[in-house]
Amino acid sequence: MIQGAYFLLAILAILALSAAFHNIYIKKIYRNVKGTDEGSFEMAELLKHLELPQGSNFNTFMIASWMLFFVAAAFLFFQTPGTFPWYYFQAIQIASSEYGLIVFGLAVMIITALLAFTIPKIYSYYIVSRNIKALMVYFTLPLLMISIAMSIYLGTVYPQADVQSWNLIWIVGYITLILPLILMMMPIIFSLKEVTR
Image (cartoon, rainbow, N blue to C red):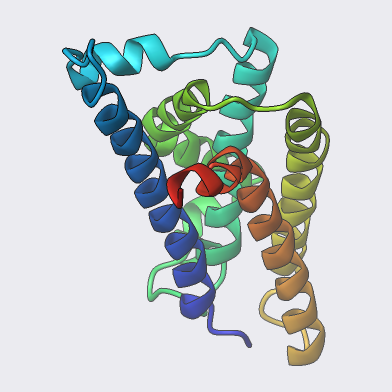
């Protein structure tokens, strides 16, 4: 069966690079403003002036998407063995419960709630075109739902599944997890042109 540590590192690398590029982007704007005649802005004041309303529907959707992303990642990497020594099925009492996966998902949502509510604020510092918003809205949640469905299936057949079919389903689950992450990072990715100027 697939050892998922390297796959998880790729996701963490995307998150880390996105955070780094966002930081560079904001600092570059700050330096440019500081270089003008009216460059007496402090960073906190600049951030306040940079904020662009993206719409309450979009913001709500992205909060839901980030919450579901963390749930999908937890289901894929922590439900069955292969990535870490601790996993969902070790909690026998919860795993054997009819509502075990719901409890697991809710626990992940509670643990990651602060991140899920904080990360979408980043979008307010970017001009997000209607087309990019459409891609993010129409594809993110369906892909995450597919990833969760793949993980639930793996949990259902564990540990009897043959290695080949297990690996194939795991890869599908991973691809449908990493694609939404890239979609959610698109405003930052498209800002790279500004960062490299």
